[in-house]
Amino acid sequence: MQGYAHDPPRTHASRSKAPAGVCLTVVGHAEIVAAVLMSTVTESLDVVDEHDSPHRLLSVVIPCLNEAQNIELCVDLALSALARAGIAGEVIVADNDSDDGSAELARSAGALVVHQPARGYGSAYLAGLAAARGEYIVMADADLTYDFADIPRFLAELQGGADMVVGDRMGNIQPGAMPWLHRYVGNPLLSGFLNLLFHTGINDAHCGMRAVRRDRLEQLQLRATGMEFASEMIVRAAKERLDIREIPIVYRPRGGESKLSSFRDGWRHLRFLLLHSPNHLFIMPGAVIALFGGLISLTVLSNIELLQRRWDVHTLIGGSLLLIVGVQLVGLGICAHAYATYFMGERDRWFDWARERLRLEHGLILGGAVALVGLATIAVILANWIARGFGSLSQQSAAICAATLLVLGIQIVFTSFLLSILGLRRE
Image 1: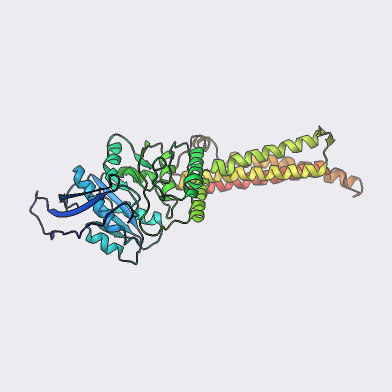
Image 2: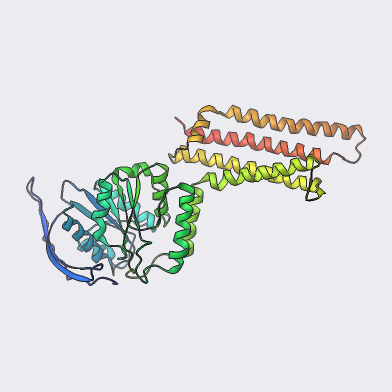
């Protein structure tokens, strides 16, 4: 284990039923090597048995997947940090179906072990968070990369009014702790993209040591089961306008084998961010495409020379297709907002304003009017064609415009129906 020495075996007093008002104690002697000081400190600790304690200020939740090499020391360090700071707390290990005896080692070290058979970083955390009984929760990985002595610092921020506290590793990464691809490319790009979309101001959005008030978990409605769970916490907190703070921490080389897949997990984070920002995924690109397509169509129909040439029917077809695609993307974005509002509990001011004032009938009237103009134009073209004895069709531009209007009208009508179906969830 890099940065730490192994502890001697822990001894635990047997647990028995205590009279009312009497706290059971477990006397453990642990030799803890503080990696920051690089010196060994031995102390005898009186630790309250948190599984029987009526009050827990703090829960430390550690996800674990085959971390037999590290988990005992992680639990020891967490318990010792709680004891030194006089914090009434508990250590919960969310075992993610380990097959190397990690759960048994964590339990023998004094942790409450929660078994989660469904594999996934987020799955483990969801199980651990559900079992936490403290007013505040500190989360940290089981790979010895984080200093559990920082637990009181996270707690102090929460008690000072923060809803969530995230560690910032980027200013103090020990040699060999983080691959250069993660340090200089992956983490800065993903954290920057997250801030661009959600304006969180967080420098290290994927730090595995963080803290949250337990009463905020229901508000966050966390669901992600994979590594994107880290992004989900911050995104949901930002959307709920919670007080998110960041504190600098040290990041050390991990003990044991890493479970992280750089490109797969990076893509999962990117995909999550896009799926939770329909404005950037659908509406903004759709609006730009539709505007571009509309300008192209107007340029052709107005016979305006551009780049010293006059554009004709083929350019008009391209503009019409762009207009149709753009409107479709905007419609998908609005539907995505509706889903997020009705099924995920999210709030968006402009969407809330619109849904309070607009109904299915408004969409049907707008779509029907656009489609009707297209149909009327097609009828006029058809009548002229018949009057000319079914000769060659010379009104190609008008026909393209009429078909475009008809398609746009149909899109608006059926998008309105879909929004109404999603809105059936409204009370």
